Length: 71
Image 1 (cartoon, one colour):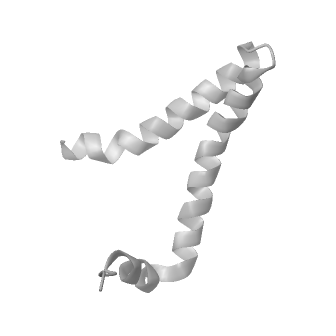
Image 2 (cartoon, rainbow, N blue to C red; image 1 turned 135 degrees about the vertical axis):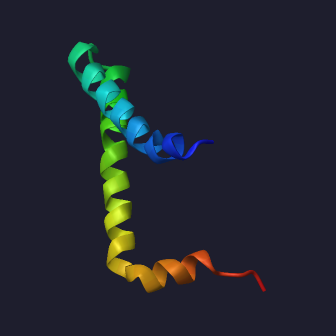
């Protein structure tokens, strides 16, 4: 995978989920569309929450978590 594609993959996925969620909320007629819109719009918020949680732990905790070796 090229560096450009790897760099832009997740921002594009998050943008697509947001657009889908907004369109589902605007065009959908209740029922399953409401649940799909809530789920799609929650994906970027969950991503932000996970990123903030990782940032608050600090770089040392992130490095330790990635270097955990099974015994």
